Length: 165
Image 1 (cartoon, rainbow, N blue to C red):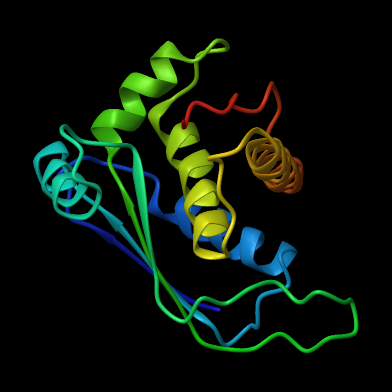
Image 2 (image 1 turned 135 degrees about the horizontal axis):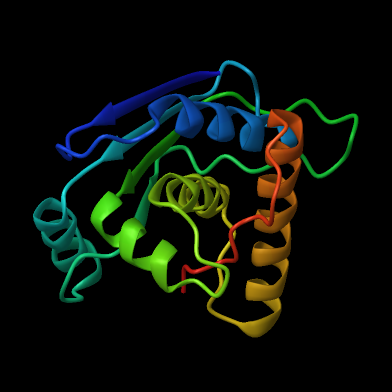
């Protein structure tokens, strides 16, 4: 997996954890190991500009995904996954900090960024949460991936509750 993490936000973030959880999520979803992903961490002003430009919505948001080759997980276990460019995930640590503090269990900015990274990966793979059944599927898968990664890392305590909408 070729994953680039580029922090343009001016905020100290755990780039290694973002890279690791993205790699874990893509492996768990059985994405071709030669596929490429870019994760960009930006400040609230840059995120607000992207949010207005691409979604026509005011204010900064937590995560945005920009798919390229529209890769999807293989439908069958024995099916060979295609390789390609997944696209870009853009994260905003300022929004992540606020959301982590407001979450029912409360968690750190880095934990929220890890959750948002998985959320962004799932969006790149075609998952959505507009409809209740889609939301249930996506958020269940997101929780399973975050929990699996946390267990693999030996992290204890509750996983961050989903705060993305």
